[in-house]
Length: 157
Image 1 (tube, rainbow, N blue to C red):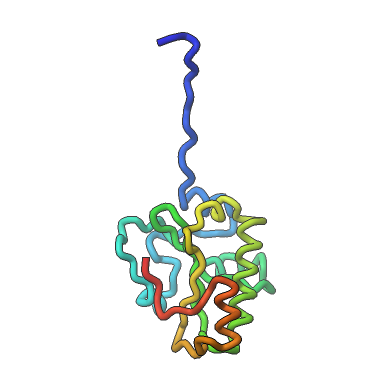
Image 2: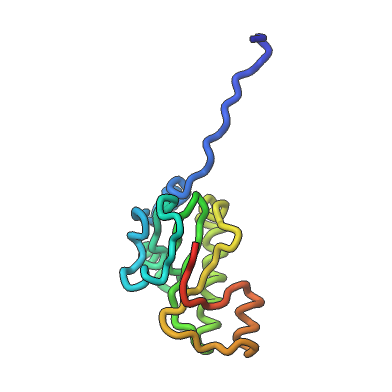
């Protein structure tokens, strides 16, 4: 080997665990451990071995951001981050969920940039905690679509 060849080391790829650990307030739980038991049945994970863990963003940031409209959860799957909000899905809830989504996007950019880098192709998901009562074609539904988030009965990955 020529002495001109330099040893090049590749940086290790960013993991969900590393990204979460860069945010001191967040507590990483194994699997879906951060998700409230009553909500887990709405999550359908096709390849559970790819789960990297979960974080209860709302609970973990309650002390540091008590007045913020905090998002609920982050889930790592296949080293991609998915952000899940369990919330009633009535027309009266649309602006509240959009406010939470805007808070999440700002928080990711300002405080959790490493986690932001791991966002899945479709990272934000509103899962109805009950029935969906937003009519397709309504003003509220169109607002959801324009913001890139519409309520769903469950989350499939």
